[in-house]
Length: 361
Image (tube, rainbow, N blue to C red):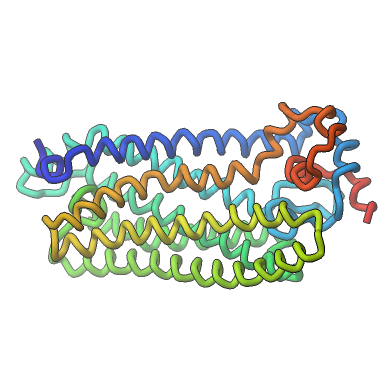
């Protein structure tokens, strides 16, 4: 039995359960995204009477969804299109999905990789280097897209910000940021032979090589930088919406419940990022000084579960924003006639708006 399995029994089982859960929920979200694309672009799987229902439930042209970037209006064609926030969520979930698959494959064949390492006098084998690269690449990829999503949420506090209208421009900026961060801090170290077996998984390998220390420290720094940025944006956004929600509640605004829930769900992304990255950083530090302590082992287990369940948590948050996709199959006009809550109905119909709606206000 490999040394890792002796020191941390059932750790791989915990990781396997978490990674499988992430893959499952990410797959659901990916399918949901493509259904929403078909609904918006080609009006496929859309109820025939949806235009009529939208007219009776749409309160304003500038809904919270449009303000937050979850959907956008094509001003030239006067039609709805998938918003920048939805695109950011999709690429975030893709990162988790492929990262979960890589982690699951490593867990299944991990024993063989570790045995190879031990039997080859600690010479790093190709498989461990490859999985180490995938581990860091998809990890940083999810960090980058979470940062872009949190930044978009922060900019929703300023309705004049161009990010809420120039979605193609900021989608390109998101890709550019992702490409540069992952290219510099993940791809370059691969060609410099920096990946291998760390302590409980493949990532930046152990060693006194100054090159490895520089790249591993740089990677930690860029993740911390993104985490701090997310905390700052979350703090400022929370203050803004707390005041706005307090005012809306005092005025008995009918969109209060809608905005309240959306804000709370949006806050999940940066919170999950910060918590899971702390759980990942703490054991790295503890393993250097307290490798065999009980506290270190506890955080190793927490990191193994938290890192792999991260995608499932984000997927659940994303699915809430795509609820309108499922509504087309399960909603009925009878429910509306019996007094369905209008704020909730606004959420369900948020993916669609006809040209007539643009002139109602």
